[in-house]
Length: 285
Image 1: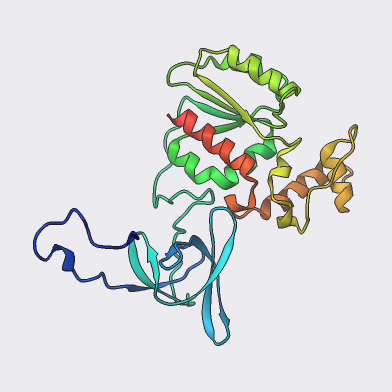
Image 2 (image 1 turned 180 degrees about the horizontal axis):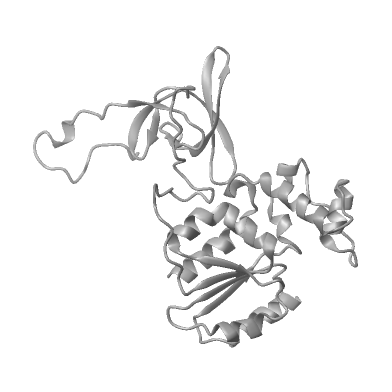
């Protein structure tokens, strides 16, 4: 027994309820960023590119996990629950707002930024804040969530006490290197105890620095370099990559170069994605 995903409406009534004509597919330019579903396979992804192959146009779709598949352009696709015939984008086609934000959420067109909530999302440093803004910025503005850097986690418990979390004033914290037995895990536990129950959530990723949350393949690497203990991590990475590493300006330029390679959530490791999404849900509950 099989289930017809697009079959008749089992809740419909009347003698002709199950004989309604199928909706007519409309032509739709396959603009970059458009999220579509292939009816035959169920594959859902955003349009990455359209090109000619073997005399016909094909479209490449990228799913939430960064995987890509190529399909022949034409009929057999759905957009927002309606059948469409994908056609090549043209230079005369007006640019359209992407159907999804960089974080994968449905884009809300012409939505003004919400007045900031009393709740806050804290991250360890400037680079963490810039990465969160780069990928989740649209979502955060719609939700009215402000991201603030801590400039290190050493004073986190005192900062939590000064913030004075409470009902309607929650605090979400994202830490680097939050693994069992680390200094960060001790600080996280102390920070949670410093506030009323249920008002502070501290989560983290396992890496020494948030740079490692960017998939190394985006930089042409198989993996991030292993840096020996005792060497400042960012400086060690830049030297291993053969990039300038003499002063803070070199580090800032390197981070800007790395951040430019992040297009969407698909360019980040899932270990960071899940934590940030959970923190956003927590402070907006």
